[in-house]
Image (cartoon, rainbow, N blue to C red):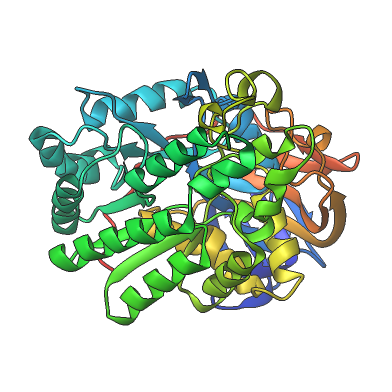
Length: 463
């Protein structure tokens, strides 16, 4: 099967130009001008952007958590991703007590295989950092194809600083990367106790408990560990301007501290927790939403390169039936997480590029090219000869109002209900096969369930 895209604006992280793109056998064969119309399918992309498929660096599909399971499984979640222009998913699988890293990876692959419609990989989460698990890092990097490792400084399954240091040492040796959920457990626990004693248990009090100080302090701990080991670390879902300032200071000292943020921390503020009728529960996530000043600083971080990637932290729980099953009177029992896997690219274009916060080239860098580089996805992330033909034909002028009913996520709300978008995917291709297209005023899935493949990632250069 061959596809020829004609006269589109091919966008790379370093520049953009009108070109044709020829795809054969699921790979990009060449990029140039005036290519002959000899292909099974010819797509006129005049007036459109040709973007590399987005890479969602942070999802939680079919994940057991807080007495329930995230509402999207691999089928519904990957269909939603495809319809939003995301063609690669990096999901987490947390190691259980006594498990190996391979156990965690294979468990999640078992859930995904035969269901996913786009390609995927796994970040194993280290929660039981036994010596044999630390020793397994080398195999995970070089044999399993999973060179990134998640740790938590919050939640009951958090690790201590010794475990973090040992993981940093091992990943430095073998080309791995440690990712960290940076919130300080003891600070938040004490805030929870104080709130409970005073009867402050609303969704807004969740945000107060997860104070910015808890994020700042945890980031400082990771910075110290990086300095001690000479290694590198990646802060997931960075939420605050204050946390970013700590990272920037460390980077100015030459330390390799990287960061990801999410659309929710760029476009939503803590005022959402005051929504009527307990609506603030929709936004209970950790870390929580912050003031507008943090949104502004995170956009600047994307622009100047202090923040390297954008992921969604897609962890959906239904407002009715999951968020409210135990937590109506106590925010501590509300399942943490929100949906976002389908809306990342449209939000980053409309709220970022259209509003002048980032350039079109920076959009590609933080949603695709930089993500591929950061996580060892050698065949993903750019429209370049030899890469996988993950291509989005993007209409920069198309208008779209986000509503729950026009999305494909298997959850009963979207945090961006009513947001007006400028720019939407028109056609989405995964390895040269069309998986989604614009039809009847919304995106439609046209791919085949089970076509997505597990991608073995390469060791990550020490950049």
